[in-house]
Length: 161
Image (cartoon, rainbow, N blue to C red; front, side):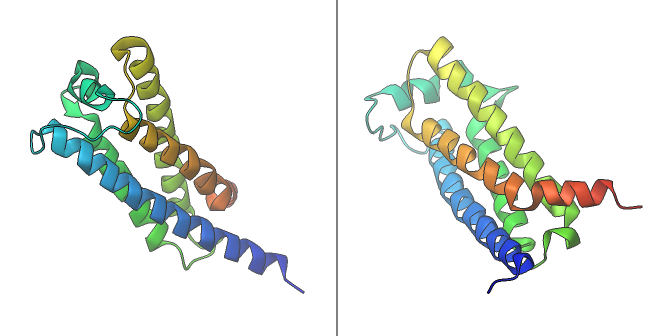
């Protein structure tokens, strides 16, 4: 027979390890795109979309406010991985700031992915496999961050006297 407290702790650990693993894939993805943006590689391998990755990667929409989207993505994924690993041994009630931070970053990353995917479709009119992979990663990370402790931590953080 399992205690529900242990089940939530186990689920939370699995969620955090999953977030860390997905974030490491995201870091590799973002660094690959950043290498192209910085001219370290001449062309991106672009499964399914021909030259779409190169078109998106060289478009004015690959940067916002002069900062490459890939650099922001790499930093975001690194922050999510660090928060997921750093707080994995503590129950959600003992790490409200880390859980809220992870939830906030994952929500921001998801919103950014939706916006950047919209830009690909409407402004660039080309598809980038690596960008869509990043959007998919953010789509998977968001519920893990929110349900894996984010909401419980927010509730306990806000109701603490």
